[in-house]
Image 1 (cartoon, helix red, strand yellow):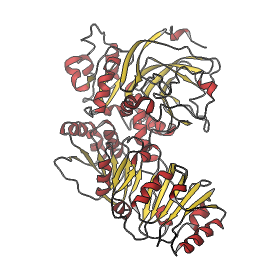
Image 2 (cartoon, one colour; image 1 turned 180 degrees about the vertical axis):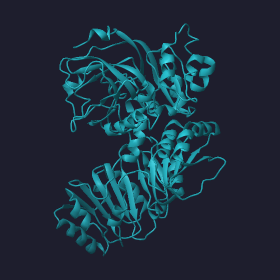
Image 3 (cartoon, helix red, strand yellow; image 1 turned 90 degrees about the vertical axis):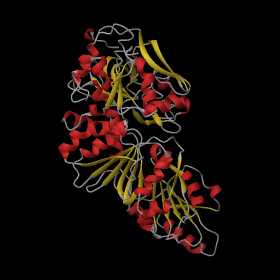
Image 4 (cartoon, helix red, strand yellow; image 1 turned 135 degrees about the horizontal axis):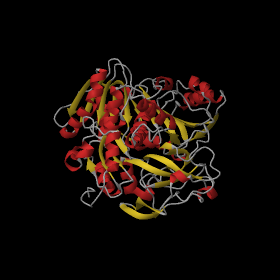
Length: 579
């Protein structure tokens, strides 16, 4: 282990927030500080944001998809060497929106050095769990502690060699850097690449109902040959034509397996499910056959589905499943309508539903700064006070970019249909149905809200298909997304601090989580581990409680100078600490 003299001694214990069971949060004032092993890194946390996902971890604990054991990517003996690995029922430290400074490294650490200031990319997609992937702040202890331990073998991307600890400079505030992670999640939801055909060398399920011809798959299969086609056909006189169409696909090099019942079809095994039919009950079953990142293509041939369909929107968000459809009889038409990504387009009429919350504000700000010709934004929420906060926070950006922004309370003003893009911040299934009802032609519906896995929303798929809608959803971000946001921050094109509503130390984390869960916070909340006894303080309260800090705000927005003033404050009593 290497510890430079300038780093000072490393304490033996530290303050930390721990989740020890479902709904059980503790402020541990004597959690041991682990010394790094040969491949390990010890980092002091400068700041860590509170996320709605932290409330889901607190509620679900070991049932959370990212709290389960790592299945592959690191051997068990390596995982056993990492003291911060905390799967299952083991207590864990939440917090994944962090910025840190490396204070010690093991003697076999190759790509990290003491003294580096780093952003923490938290989403370890190369380490899958049973239902998701490993992550900092979940099954690896996170940023709501003074010192976090990471292992270099888990924080270097095995494909690209990129580090999950991203070096940053000294100019920016810790809060601005900690907030890069949630802003990067917003960036990822627009930038994620979609696919307009089959995924090569994967399994495809083809299902055809009586009276439906199998058309439009020839060129799709030719462009990306699947490893296997599993076919379930109807049993009437038309089966011969359907079978001939599938056998024609087999002639192009794909292996075909015939099944006679949906009960014989394995679940969560297919990259693509192509359904020629309009039976709503069959559609609800077939979606369960999708593998993660799978796509279901509904080819109605002009038939009506006829009732609402329970669509698994939780899987759209977490498993990146996708839904396409066509009223024609050709599956190729559905694939041709898939967009290249979930990005905004010039001329879009955008509705952000739940816009006055922390993440909604980020979506509005990102859209306003995009510089897209003819883009208009409708920010929708149900709280006038939070809507006014949103209006104030984004006002300078909206003025500088000459953006058409309308702020609407949907309790008092009815929304008119015809949106070409809808971003949904609130995990309420009824709002997904409403989004489809509000959609115009070619509408992209961004399910940013973190629906629990297997949450279903009753959707009018007839309208969805007729309007050529497309559901997009992502969870977390990639290294590239964080670098995009960081570059905007460094170029002064973006100030992530506009989304900050409150600051706290560890004593206020419980209140912060409650504010996030109840959606009473108008923006993000950042925790400063250096101030363990500081309770929750909203920026609107600073003038009364800490006027010397309030003097450093810029038009009500948090700044690096305000951060320095807060950290320099001398805490003399519990009351002074804001408890």
